[in-house]
Amino acid sequence: MWPPNSPDLNPVDYEIWAVMQRRVYRRKIHTIDELKQRLIEVWCGLEQSTVNMAIDHGAKDLIRACVRAKGGHVQAAGPEARALIW
Image (cartoon, rainbow, N blue to C red; front, side):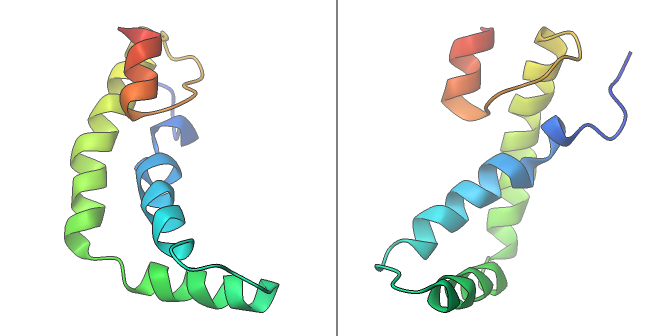
C-alpha cells in the first residue's frame, strides 16, 4: 500500500530547504524583515537544476526510506535516512 499524498515524500521538505538554509544564512540576518527578504531572494534564485536534482536524488532516497518503513514516517533524507534504514 502506498501512502497517498505523503508529505514525507516531498523533496522540498528536505533537499530544497537545506539548500535554502545554507544560502540564506551565508550572511548574518539582523531582523525579521531581512530574513523574509533573504528567503524570497533565495527562493526566486533557485536554479531549475537544483530543483531537478532534489527531485531526482532526494525523492529516490525518500521513497526507499518510506518502503523500508512500510509506509510509516520518515525522519530524514540523505545520509541520515540511509543510516536509519539501510
